[in-house]
Length: 69
Image (cartoon, rainbow, N blue to C red; front, side, top):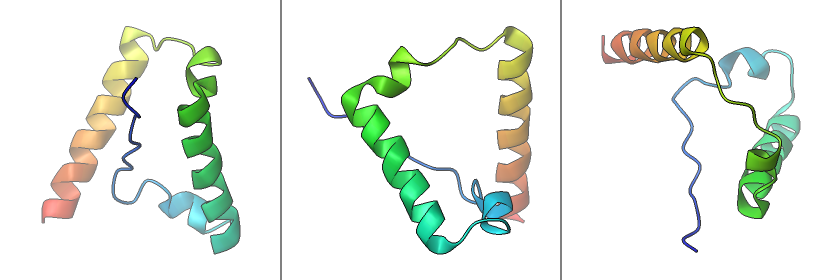
């Protein structure tokens, strides 16, 4: 099976960075990537509703527009 790669949107941890140390952020990223590698992230996931999906996509579009300016 092909190993999945995790890609993070620019600025996705900005709010967390205000509350967490760099070591804590690094540990969070490592934990997310380990969960992807082991498949645990999929075992514990729940599908998004259409409304949740649209909200996330709108936020990503707005973030993309703001980083281009």
